[in-house]
Image 1 (cartoon, rainbow, N blue to C red):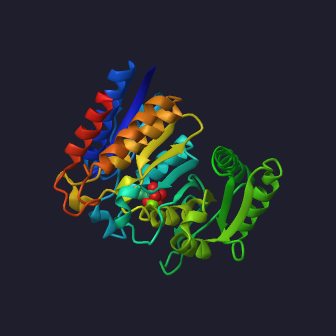
Image 2: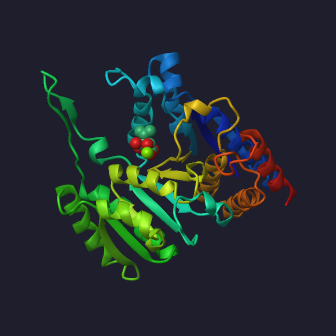
Length: 351
Ligand code: IPM
Ligand code: MG
């Protein structure tokens, strides 16, 4: 198989973790006879530094010509500390999501038994669910602004039925391939958009009789994730609730550095680690590359290369079981980003 891939490493630890993901893809190419052609593009703070624009037109061009996008991380403290900044790195990613129509963000949450002791919870390890987060609408993309005197600000939250239906379909279908449970998380006791979500998903459930559907308010869901995370199978939710819940869920397994994601688009899809740019760690060879490596496994699954994806999942599990992991997963570890990438790559080539 031959595929063109846009490589947007971004800021902070992005370039070093993406480098490891690419090593793994090189091994897959070698082992299975595929060809992946990469085109690199600027995005985020590094793109602002070089061009003034967090999403330069050349980057957009590369993305629209590619079969998939591999994304690192974006963000820089100098923008976080400046509420008046005219441009922000995050805008690059948000515009990319909107323009490329990356509406369906899939964030699988899994726990690896060998690192359960790092989990903040007393869990038996039976945590295995996936979050379907709507990614191109809601409060992130509604009309926003300030009054002239600056004392009033607003962010509108808007949802169309068709936007709810298209991610709803994806979530129901995912449920059919899993334990057949779908939980819609909303704030229907307060928000009109949430009531539209509930109404729409309830209607759709008539065509998915095998799926057991339930509903939770976001505040209760935040609590259930801590006291009873085993209850979840597929979570479906809107953009902002999904942002918050997925960070909360990501620590259940002991490290945010483990979790990959896919953002499925109308034509092209994007694959990225859930974690942020972690600028304090940049260049120190301590960042965990596993989330990026698992993100490319999700990309291979998306291409229909399930055997190849499975080999990556297996090699990652082996590296975790053998404690070939960065210090976020094992306090005493002196193993670095590069070494984890090398170990997983070798593992792939050997088996
Ligand atoms: C995420 C991130 C982004 C978001 C930021 C970087 C804009 O937190 O992908 O979860 O809020 O969606
Ligand atoms: Mg987030």
